[in-house]
Image (cartoon, rainbow, N blue to C red; front, top):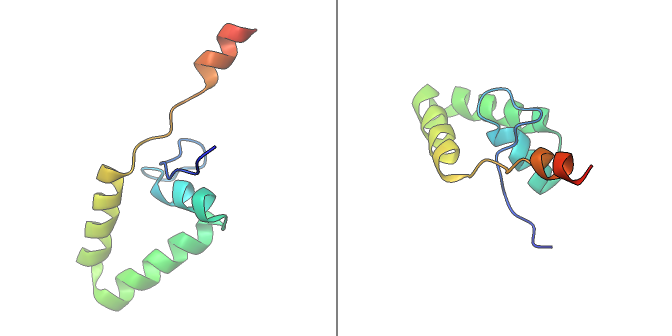
Length: 73
């Protein structure tokens, strides 16, 4: 199965961007969030918010498999 980047519903804080990226790169989402805050403090708030919004718009939400699981049982 091909590895794909999705925003995650489970474990999300705002839009699920970092939880999806953490699963894709196999790291703790807290580390990504801390890195994002450090990036924002180093570059100003606008670039951090801008890149987060872009990621939110272009990364698709993960499709839920709960409907398929319910129908099989």
